[in-house]
Amino acid sequence: MSKAVAVLGAEAALGFGLTGVEVIRVTDRASARTVLLEAVDNGEHGLVIVEEALLEGLSDADRNALFQRNVPLVIPVRLDLRWASEGKAAEDDYVAKLIRHAVGYQLNIQL
Image (cartoon, rainbow, N blue to C red; front, side):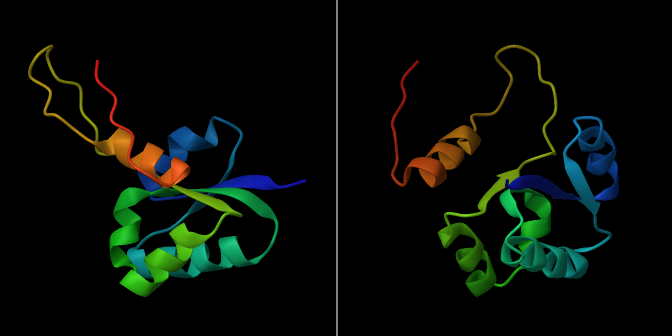
């Protein structure tokens, strides 16, 4: 049975640890690269959650290799979100990017 793992910085790891998901804490982008590549290649994981900021340390080739895979599914999560007053939140296409990655093409959702 495939497992889920989250590769996160120290602060985010505390919260994700409460969910019961296996969490691997990394201290910098270089160690994140090593851990991510190991997590996707070991065959144990069906889902790899990674803090989006940690992906910035990857080369384009490494990043493309991660997102071209079907198993495990690599899901970046953005953790720098902040509460904003109603009507003051900046427009964001974060959810659209997640859907595009999962589905394979752009969906235009109008609310």
